[in-house]
Each structure stands twice: as C-alpha cells, then as structure tokens.
Image 1 (cartoon, one colour):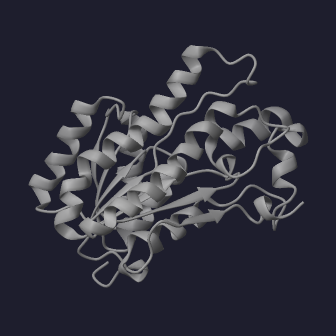
Image 2 (spheres, rainbow, N blue to C red):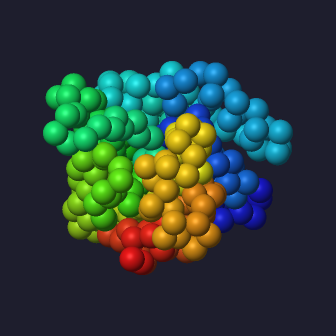
Length: 258
C-alpha cells in the first residue's frame, strides 16, 4: 500500500455500499489512496469497511448520506478537505435509477432518477471543484452503456437520459477544467454482475431483460465490476495525467457488436 498507484491521494468515492462502488473502494484502498466514501445504507457501509480492514486497509466512511441533499454533500466534501488537507479525486459512482417503459413511467419516478443519477453528480462535482483546483485533481464519473445505445429489451428511458447527460456534463467540465488544471473523464459500464443484475437473472433466468445485451459480450456473461474499477483507477491516477474529456466503455464489446 505504500507503493500503490494512488499513494498520497485523497479520493472521495460515492456509493460504496455494494457492487461497483464497493469493489472500487477496495481496489483504491489497496492502491494506497485515502478513501473517503459515502452511501445511504449504514449496514452496507459497515460491510465495506470490514472487507477493507480485513485486507489491512482503511476507509473513512459516512452513512447515511443523501447525495441529493446539497448541504449534506457540502459538509461531507468540506469535512474531508479539513481532515486530510486536500482532495485529489472525486469519483462519482452512486446512482439509483427507476425503470419503466417510457410511455408508462410516472413523473415521480422520472424525477427520482434525475435527482439520483444526474443531480448527485452535479452537486458533488460543483462542491469539490474548488478543492480539486488546488491540487490539479481529477473527477471520474460513472456513465452507462445506456447513454450510448438504445435497448429494445430493457425499459430504461429515464436512466438513458440521465446517463447521457452525465457524459455530456463530463465533456463540458473537462473543457472548463482545463483553466483550473482539473481533469474530468468517465467510465461507461455495460451489464455488470452487480446485485440488481444478478437479482434480475435470479428472477427471470435466460429471459432476463439484459440477456440480449449480455449475449453480445466477450464471455456471454455479465461483467466483473472490478473491470470498471480498474478503468476508473487509470483515470484517477497520474498515469492519465494528459487525458481529459474521454469516456471508457467497459461493456465486453456489447456497444460495438451486432
């Protein structure tokens, strides 16, 4: 941990409670980062803390934290900067979409998705921005294959809209960040083996709505969330010091094969 790819960096990481956020927290801790994480669920947060500590690492975890509450996010960001003296990376992983066919999705569920997939990125990025300007730091946003392609089998219009906005916001922040020395990039996962996806397969088997997408991948199976974490690690590290405004698609080739 003293010679890791993130040694000396303070990393804010949202959504550490499970799935991609949890494995990213574990990987970044192994790579020497001071990880300052948050999530809504205290029990899941405690599980992540225990897993990292079992490996000999450490994480500064806050739960519950509602990322749609701008004042709460401000306290979290500024508190981290006060405790550790700097912020080097903001990793916007957390999201909570609601799915339904476009014609049937309620305004309430659409607005919930906007708040929990787009607003959470906006608030955290804007509040961390002045701290990142001091360190010439980086933002890594988690996009989605839904921002790149429509899916006939999966009713995800609200999710696609928000993740498309996240990718557009990434490019614009990258442009504005040049003057501040802040790099902004994104990673767009395909169908990964996260709890919601595994739950879908458990319920529907081979008829899971994501199955046609997964069938186009390298393995024909949902991807390992660690693959997304490694792409994020590159963008968070100094290895990508001359990289900004890009999106890395980690989807097993699904968005590029027919």
